[in-house]
Length: 278
Image (cartoon, rainbow, N blue to C red):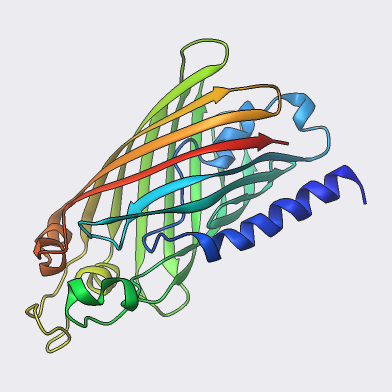
């Protein structure tokens, strides 16, 4: 088996295994540039074998569920891989680049998003039904100029979990502190349709012992600020850290789930890992 095949198989195994050990029920994503933008910055010698990317292992801290006040920490893997800068895997996302221009990259993308684990939240949500993991298909577009980048992603549910759609817009700038340290601040916003919002923040009549019925309307529901740091340890190893501070907006912030004793409109997600570059 060639080194390329070994790397691809190893990455794939960690990619699949990561879903079983990650404790996050909100999402499985780690901050920094999306792989379809980040792949432009990868050194030419790492692109020689067609596959390039990173495999990291570290500690993730994330909300117990979307809108939760408490956080859970767990061991988690971070996998980003790109094949000829056309096919890419980024943790819970898989996609293909269909247009590769000087200033615009666009294509198709899919992802899984975690819902709400009944065993984890039963005490806080008074028996409110769990939300299954959803599978979504969508489109993405992104542009980068020097160290600045801007991306947009639109998704529609094809699994029947929330039967809605959502859109995310984010932008950032990478500062090179020195030859081995980079810091990337990122601003982002997420919008959800009526069905999407009602599934994650709404409450049906009689569904909970402690919360009243609530209908969540579509709209902008999350604004976030991220900080991503990478410290190059050697040619093949890097130390990575990220922190995301989110604020829930609109009907999400007004939901009894968020306003209850176990909820909060302020969300914190963090990740610290060491990664192998290939």
